[in-house]
Image 1: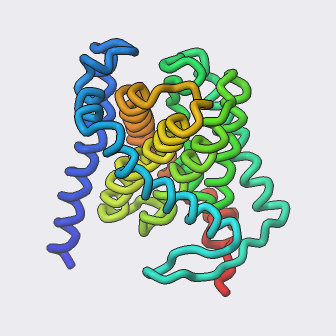
Image 2: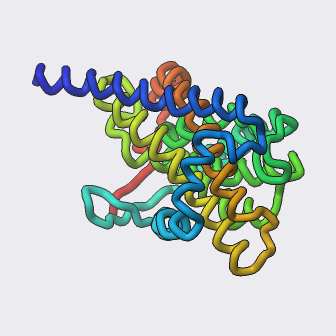
Length: 279
């Protein structure tokens, strides 16, 4: 057991460094290249080197699986122990209030920085993304649904509401909260294993999945219909890597919010595990 604990501590440090490096290095290089410098930004160059069609193939499973998971959860099914399990949420006044509060706080937090535009009409600097994993870890599906609705509210308030918000941003932000909720063992983040899982899955995988989900919709459906208004080269050269960086740099700080809030939520009987009935 002691040896296992040491391994998890090492992994936790490694994943924290990787997540921080992804966010900080990406932000610094992006600022150096300029907001529209895909030809100079190291992340943009790396993404575009694979080609648009390759990205359509890579990102499609993220969109398909993410959509399936969302609708499974909405109809009371989830993945548990590599099996599909059925559960029931009470969806009484407490769950509805939890989702509504998550939506209001997340949406308001995002809208507060809506003026820090990076890609007009599509994205901006969003430090409130740190709240998405928090609401997933604390409130589960109601929290993740609140995050999805909150993103729509923020897009509306900031003047960004469009096809990208509805077809990609809604479920994409749901996944930001959902991935840590499903992949982290101990939601209190009180041990090395849960910390390692949070930074690997919650920060890195969650940020990538959200980005690929939204980017595939923007790019592929624009290719098919031309109605999105953001060229695929721009989607994969600027938008997609920026969303990853934007999410990661905010979410590396989420544990600072989880540590003090988790005991309160648990003591009040508001943690998702206190609200779910397995069928």
